[in-house]
Image 1 (tube, rainbow, N blue to C red):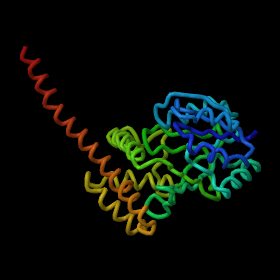
Image 2: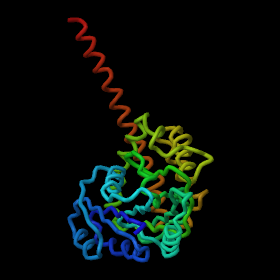
Image 3: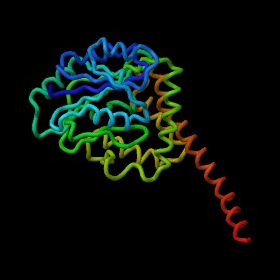
Image 4: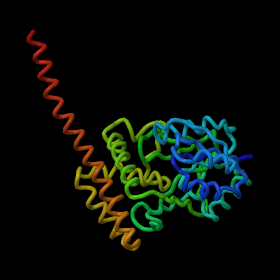
Length: 296
């Protein structure tokens, strides 16, 4: 088989069958990499005919790259990376099957348009749409960038876009959703405070003339994160909800845009502020310690 599908799981019993089912027409090897689920995810994966392996979760980048190395895929063969709640729409599955079958020699990978669902409804408006991700690529050409949050796969070579959508179902309660985003806000704050991130080898380029991911990374790093701390979440919400027509997503859209575009982004800034204050308060103590030592 010229295609391997890698699915990351953790307590994913409720959505895994739907994800695997959407891949059935691809004639692919399917590997489930599980982070020691506490429910029936692993048993279900085996029942569905998937290869299974368990590996402790460190972060998404490390887990994705470990999974690909574990799969031992030939460099010229194709790999498709999915999360346990990401379902291929029929048009996307057919587009993948067609491209893998034709095996274009001049292409290293394909971008996929992802549609986010929230509380069971698609979020079609706002600044996060359209959201493009490199998920299908030749195993020897692609890898996940080394980031704690907002990771993208990158490929050495030309990329094209696939037809159809990847549906990110997010079939979790609001409690679990906010718990996850609380953890991710910590990871994002660490990324922002680490000046060594965001440039260099192995990281998605910031390029206003590049693909949609590169342009979004440029706007994020060059505009948003250069705007005033603790204030920038306000205009982002206004831009996303009003100017990018987020209000057209209805009541669910209001909840989503308040939580994703304002609460989450404000929480990231609050954690950045907390760390900056902690660093500043530690400096006088260090200086006092040094001064005390110099007198002896």
